[in-house]
Amino acid sequence: MRYHIDTIPVWDAIKLDGECFLCALRRKTELNEVEHYLGASVMEPDTRIQVNKKGFCCNHQQMLYALDNRLGHALLLESHVSETRERLSKAVKAAKVAAKGASGASLMDKLTGKAPSAAKQMEDAAAALEELTGSCIICDSIRDNMGRYLHTFFHLYQNDAEFRRKFEGCKGMCIPHAAELLRLSASELPAKALGEFADTVGRLETEAFDRMQEDISWFCRKFDYRNYDEPWYNSRDAVERTVNKLRGWCVGAEPNPKE
Image 1: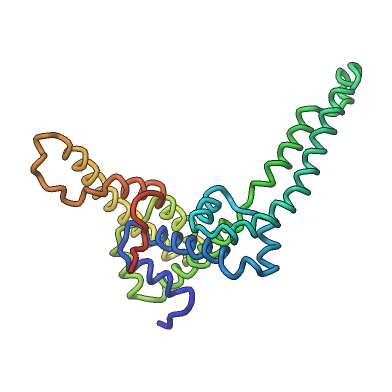
Image 2 (image 1 turned 120 degrees about the horizontal axis):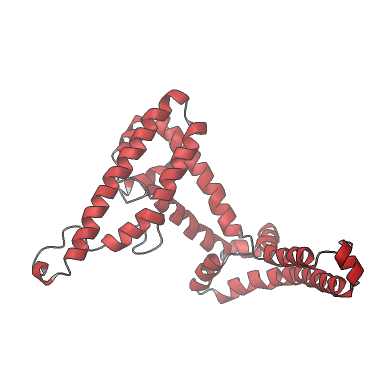
């Protein structure tokens, strides 16, 4: 089968033989995106416009900061803060108007319901403030890229026998990504293939959690003095792997080993 720009990353991820190839793919995408926004793109007008509009969530601000490119980070923040100030001023003004409107209403208007609802107006003003921090350009980009990669996954699953065998022999996925595959399968696969795909996902997850249960249980038992001289087997990183299997990669070694 011909490989192209979308199939290669999916293949690379599943070849890692990790606990969740989609977590590995997502993490690699995330790291590339963070580096992208502190690279040459920092001076591109189109990039700056989108950054000014959407900004970055706390997690991606931390990742940008950790790259230790203070000037690049500051340049992104400078124009973003300028645009945010304008939107902030409008939200604050709306809050003041709402507060004055509620406090200046007569008792009769309040009793008859003619006075504007203070709670509703303040809620609207608060929502306008929250909107200033409710978006992240990197989160959006990761979501778009992962959507494309998931579509590619199903394409490979249906058309590449080698890839399908590799998937059927993998260590499963984290629960969130297993759920995502099942959800998308209805629109990505023909109806006749759904049963087999669901069986495969179910088997992979059951086998993975049987293994996780054994590893985490032995990790706990190793702290019993009677097992001090016993080998660790595959349990040394059981805590990290179990956390990541339950909720998606978030702790421990990077899911994409350094070459």
